[in-house]
Amino acid sequence: LMRTFADQSVIAMHNAELFRELAERGRQLQIANEHKSQFFANMSHELRTPLNAVLGYAELLVDGLYGELPAKAVDVLERVQANGRHLLGLINDVLDLSKIEAGQLALAADTYAMRGVVEQVVAATESLARAKGLALTTEIAEDLPLGHGDERRLTQVFLNIVGNAIKFTEHGAVAIRVGAADGQFLVAVRDTGPGIAPEDRQRIFDEFQQVDNSNTRQKGGTGLGLAIARRLVEMHGGAITLESEVGVGSEFLVRLPVRPDLAPPAAAETPAA
Ligand code: ADP
Image (cartoon, rainbow, N blue to C red; front, side):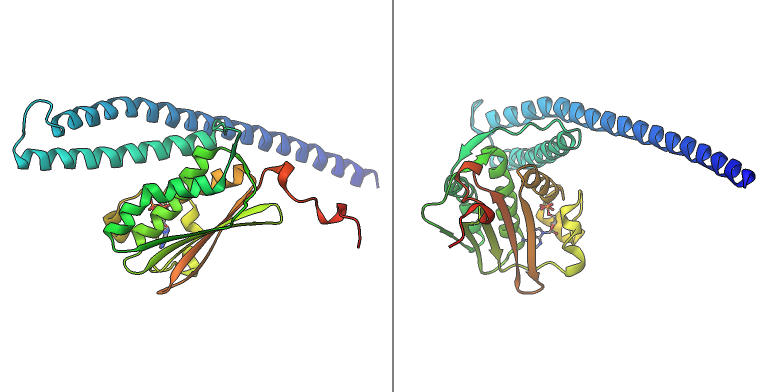
């Protein structure tokens, strides 16, 4: 009996030591991760400044500030601008994601109107839809409650989702529906695009994941948009889900809490009839 006790205490000591070592390694890993995120955040910031200068100078030339340029030169400059804007988008995405991962992205605490958010997104994307011959429609419920959170960041979320719907759809329509029930907004963005296969429906929310790399590269994009969108929505206490049928289309559903003081009381608190 004594021996078993002795053996057990040796094992217990050993386990405790192992546990301490694992905890220490976890702590080091976390520190390394924070350094990595901080590095990306700093680097993205440093890259943006000269890139903004490049874009600014190109714009001066395109605008004819130094005289009329030959058509070919304008064409080249417009390519400089398009590539510069693409790079800026990529840098902004990496910066956002690093900030989120480092826990350094602070959300504003605005009271916002969901109708206003959706209308801003439509205003920013309708010319894109029109250029592709797609109908962009909205159906927004009357008397929506107010929301509480970071209006600019939520606009970014819906810009990404609606932008994707337009980007990946060649024929048909993109329809946005907005309603509220049970203390939540429900924003549905449905498209008649290629759809997303069941095996891809989870991973497109991960970083740098694109369904079809050749197709996506052709269409531009970084594969970071949905990863950022999901985190931003979750930071607001909401969730993004996806329904899709290959060859028919996709529907992204975003749920976000309405301003807490405006949510109907929980069922348990309402007196029984
Ligand atoms: P990006 O659009 O920059 O590639 P996202 O993270 O926004 O990155 O999207 C990831 C991938 O999910 C896209 O590359 C595309 O393959 C797929 N995807 C997103 N939205 C749609 C959609 N509405 N229809 C079809 N595929 C989509």
